[in-house]
Length: 268
Ligand code: DDQ
Ligand code: CA
Image 1: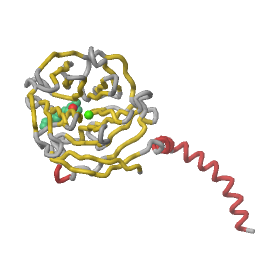
Image 2: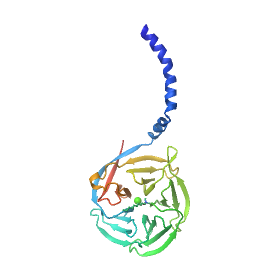
Image 3: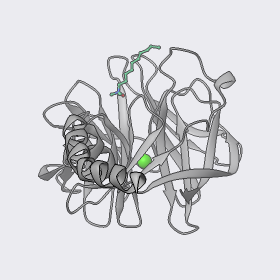
Image 4: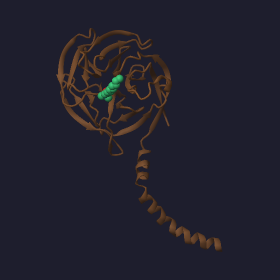
């Protein structure tokens, strides 16, 4: 009897208490919403050697080879690599004043952008011979492509789409997760209808719906490069995603990383 009275008294209070608690913790609803975005971890399928002096800024895979651009003033370059050995098969240095950023390709051309010079360059994809320069406003960070367009990041939460022939901007999307902008979008890759973008200075890759700009998945690569291989408090962060569509292989590396990994995603 006593127990019942106790129960009656307190059950009437509990709903009110919950409302008060929910109001006091606005983060809880945001966390619940964040939990709705699927997260992925990874499994390393292969680890390959990668030049630890390459400050990786752009990466793509084409016809059996990796192409990489590197940054830093006076150390920027474009390279063609053998995946299995990391061997540099071909290389051209960019002018000293240029800080190299993302690269992609279209037909027989390799297209690259630079960090703060508001200028990009076009090279012959086979010979790496310089063809022309083009311009854009703002910073240049990552580049990627799909069947119709070139996609560019600039450090903000916006992605630009460029016409592959004129290299002029045609439109933009804003990238959001739970309605909040996601900035620091860096190296990009088009993977099976989504845009993958690593977030600068984190181990996270956002999977972005190209129509809405919404983040539809987070890939957490925490621990992929053992801490012993990292220079503490240095800029050797995850940067570089390449996809081999023919063999459905996904590659990642980072700035100054001694390794490049083929990974398989695991849904948590
Ligand atoms: N960005 O590629 C994210 C756009 C810029 C990276 C700039 C990092 C500069 C670090 C310089 C450290 C010198 C070892
Ligand atoms: Ca890429």
